[in-house]
Length: 569
Image 1 (tube, rainbow, N blue to C red):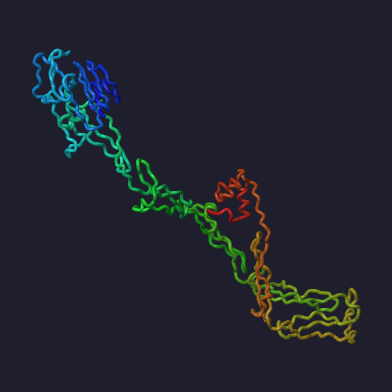
Image 2 (image 1 turned 30 degrees about the horizontal axis):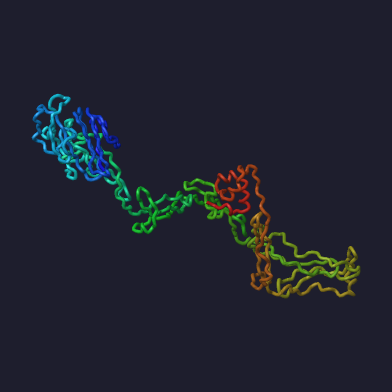
């Protein structure tokens, strides 16, 4: 389909202007009346035409827009001359060459392409000025696709304006712009240049009417898909606020088409090395535990005691911060038990004897008391067991005797030896014993009675072994369950270490103590400032100073119940 447009040099459209197609008919312009004909495009192949009787009083331009191969333009015109009888045709013109911008007139067939001169009275009076190739100004021209390597596009020398009536130049498409993309469907626009109608040589744009320059239409280009590529997302936050952590990012295989990025199957990116989706990260160096002092001296001079040292949480710039800033699981101990070795001496005791020394009346029960080196207790002085020897005898009474004369035997002295056969002494006197008192008599008063021996052999035990133990130590904790210890030894009859004791009869060396709960100190300023502090506890946010202060009561309560519940950072 082709359409022609008629415009004045001032830019005013006369027929088919502003990209609109007018209806066939008569239109006034250029000082004359034009008849516009447009045959039926279905039933006729003839083109459209502009016909005017003239004369024109200004230069008019005819433009043709075609979407099919250029069918050409046929035209006829009439010029005014001084000789009305003998019309003359300029000898230098060729048939079909445009002349002086005049339009075709009604007369002979357009297909013949002939020219004729008819007498016409012009509004200007004399013969009009004719434009010939020889009268045109000359200027450098540039040929498409044959540009010199040393003449860039923007160095076309300025040229003087051609005569007003020149119609030797028109706009022509000389290629397209570069495609906006190298793949994936881009866009480009046609490039229109001003060229000479006959030679098609490029001339400065000032030789053409700028108002008639076609508007470039966008055209698709490079419609084949772009190669797939890995689309790399942003790294996630580091999993640790300090120290070595991990961060992740999303890596997708994508292709661009029609200015849209589409996610495709990963195999399309297999020709490319896939970027890492995980990486280590470290926002800052974590605070760490520092041991600021050495261990103190043990709390006891001998036996088992305790010692302490100063442990602080220190930031990466050297400041002491709250313990919660450090990993509580890695906190070094700041208190521990210490064993200063055996104390000088301790009293080791056996159980009381089962039998009373007298069958009636007052008697005694006995036990063994030995001063020995102590490895546990810290309650005794280093120099020895001291003068407070535990009692070896304790009173016992098997009931009153019937007031009669009898020999009264005192308690036996300690056996002369610790084990095996020895001797022991006692005092034997004659007495008359009443209910509350007794009277010492001369020995002859009891002569009729057999006098008990005042000396006897003794055999406390065979020279074997027996368990001895010290007193219990202090409890390791004052509440919430601690422990205390004592030393237990197997000793032979000569008070030397032995392994002959019965293991099943060995007394316990360690037992629990102080199982009661600790009573925390009540801080009146420790209160919950918000109603939903239970959420803070459930989210384990009490390790942060802000939440520990804002929800002090809840955080303190759960810390006392479950010391490991709050976690650590």
